[in-house]
Each structure stands twice: as C-alpha cells, then as structure tokens.
Image 1: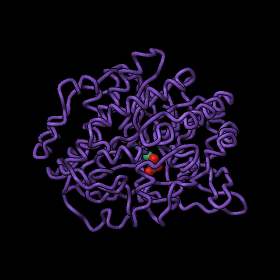
Image 2 (image 1 turned 135 degrees about the vertical axis):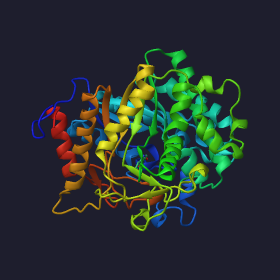
Image 3 (image 1 turned 90 degrees about the vertical axis):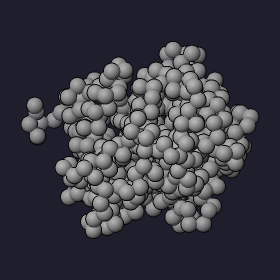
Length: 470
Ligand code: IFM
C-alpha cells in the first residue's frame, strides 16, 4: 500500500471526463423545431422550480458548443458525457427533426476533432411533453417510442459514437418524478411511479437489444444513481429494515432486473398492494436483462437511514433532491440522519469511502459475474462559489474531487475494473428544481454574460489528468 503522501497513478486506460445534460445546458428551447419537454412545462408550474427559472437559455451551449469543446480540450478532458434531447430530435415525439440531429452531429464532429471521446446518453429526463400527455412513462407505449427515437439517433451518429447509455438515473425519472412529484412531470402517485420505473427499464432493454443487433461494435450501458444505505444503528432491527428498503428501491429495483432478470422478492412484497406485477408482461424481464457492456454509476453522497426521526436529522439540512421522507411507498417511515461529515451546498454528506464500498459491492454482486466494467458517470458537488478578481477558489470542491478520485483508486486496488470518471458537471447549469441556484461546475458560468471561468477545481483536475496521478 502506498503511504498517504505518495502520488498514486491511474491505470493507463483509465479516462477522465466531465458530464452535462441537454436540458441543463443547451438553451435554444424554441429553436430549429424543438418543442416542449416535460421540463419546459414543469418550469411553468408556479413554485415547481426555484425563482421560476427555466431552460430557455441555460448555458446557451446550443450556440456556444464549439467554444465549449475548445474549453474541454484546454482542460485536458479525454471524454465528454452529454445527452441528446428527445424533444429536439423528435419534436412532440413525432417525425425526426434533421436540424435537431444535425446539432448533435456537429457536436460529435467537434469532439472527435479535438480528440475527446463522446459518451452519449439518450435520456436525461426531457421526455417530449406531447408524450407525457399520452401518459408519459406510465404508458407502456412510451418504451417502444423511446426505442424508435434511439434507433433514429443511432442512424445519425452511430458511425462516430461508440459509447451509448440508454437512461440516466431511472430512479429519478420514475420515483422522484411520478411518486415524489419533485421533478417533472410532478405527479404524486405510487402506483404510477412504479409503472414508470418498469417502463423505463423496458425502454432500456428494447433499445439495448436492437442497438446490439444492429452493430456489435457499440458499447452499450445504462447509468444508475446508486447508494450505500447504512443503518444509523446497525444493531437496531428497524434501522436495518430501513436500510434494506432504501437499498431495495434505489439499487436492487434497477440492478436485479438488468443483471438477474427478476425484481427483488422483498421489494415486490413491499409494493404488492400497488398492483405492480400487472405491468410486467411475459418476456419483459428477458428484454430488460439484455447484455450490456458497461454500467455507469452516479454517486454523490452517503446515506445514513433510520426508522426513527431524530432532531439532528435532515430537518437541519438544506432541502435536497433526496427527500426527508422517501417518495417510495415501501419506505414511508425512513428518515435520513446526518452523520459527523462535511456537507455540500445541497446538504449532502461528503462520504468518499462510500463510493469505494459501492463500486466493490456492485462489482461483486452484479457486474463482476456478468463480466462487465464500471464507469463513474457522475460525481460532483455544489458549493456557494464566489468569483473574486476573476477567479473561483473552490477549495472544498478540489478536496471533494480528489477524495473521490482516491476512492476510485481504492476500488481499483481492490480489483474493481473502473474504466473512467466523469465529473458532474463541466460547468454550472440548470439544477432542476433548484434552477440556477446550485453550482456544480468546475467551470463557472455567468448567466448574464455567458462568460465561462475555470475554477480552481478545473485547474486541479487538469493537473491530475496530465499527470495521470494524484
Ligand atoms: O444535476 C444532476 C444530474 O442531472 C443528474 N444527477 C445528479 C446531478 C446533481 O443533482
């Protein structure tokens, strides 16, 4: 083992990147044929998004993508994770829009020209509003529409893009959006959310199956927001059961069907009264478990859960995308406690060793037996950055970044094949229900002028990338 001060190297094939998503950075919401997504509509609901912010302009990346790619090159990034907007590619979920596809084609060309590997995500939450009006992800047909959309994007970009991710964080796109109601489309109904979860998984499986049949050189995968649910008191049966239920809804509800072709029995029992099984048709699980090549793991924070509220619990933390009470019906009496750890501007615990444990566990139980590798597709922190004399001295983010990169090295040392890392996010952007209030970027965005300023964390990341060690 190296001592704590000696530099540690990353494997030669490990890649360093940064991630964004279409709705969060593109803007140009009404240009070149794009129509509303569920997020455009949700932003118009009074009180849904802080300051009534919206994605109309965002980081204006649609017009500034060339400069943004040059900036990535200057930072030394080797890979860039972005998403395509379904509403731009198929306005209203209908005919394909050549102008929309052309934007992504130009972006991919620009990336390749600068030697940056494109890592494409097909769905990062911006369902066409017209499809929501037909039921959205609660409607089984949306899964088949998604597969058609994916094949159309592949027709346009498949000759140049190798890494394809079907969905980003289906937990958020189903449970947080259709049960918790905190994300678009803002529905609060447990049975609807469970149906949405299954149909998202079905969409993933249908797409993987058809893309693999078309082209065996593609690297196909999905990105999940996974968690390490620790019982506050590991000797307390109630706390252990709270941890089981959170692990069930965040992790196993998605991992088990993808890697084992079945839903976890305990979760099914927890939600039996909601009629979930009626949505799972014969053959669905076989489709959902179609082989993939890589699993994307998004990790932001630790989770200490209990069946009992406490005065030191989340009540003292900033409201967060991780709600005090879970939107999942089987976790109605789960409470998050804050441990003695630093927190980010989201009120999230900074717990890098949780990432090591998570990667190890996922490898041991799911991806290792399937013979596939892992990539950390998102990890990052929001802080209340200040611009001082043209610089942002975001020392907390530098520590966060370095600590999580070390945690990945620990997992690699432990035998987990982690292929790369994407920091979230390349630049400050639209943080969903938080609007522009939360800054996750290693590059600051001035939303008045659209000026980009690399923060100290960007400089630190560039140093790590060029030395391939830290
Ligand atoms: O900004 C989001 C991203 O869109 C999905 N994963 C979590 C990030 C931070 O909340």
